Length: 174
Image (cartoon, rainbow, N blue to C red):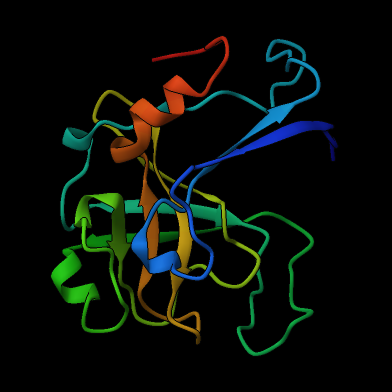
């Protein structure tokens, strides 16, 4: 496992941890040193998704180190887990969770008995495009407490301009 030093965090200026369902749950981490992708094949850049890359009913992949048993605090895995989740309309998700007034800020998935869980927050939601490229569509934000259903993800396409504005020197833009 490789550990990286963090220089700073850039948190969205409108983020409010008391009202996470208002959206703006996005931040960037600036590393102390540049990554050398050629010398570290297990760490590679990911492209940022565009709105047109995403469709309702599409399968997306979430990975993380969060709990694998929702009710147990110490059930974090020793290896990275991934789960395939289905992108659903926010109208469906609004029956289970509060969603932001500006619904473009989030993406929603709903699958029976599988989702992200405690410890997965901030993790990636990716999708493979027809041309084979993987793009990041979302970032784990919040979901149902039992970790078995609705998950809301911060929408990368919605915040893409904010992300690019806050990167000092883009090294890899797709």
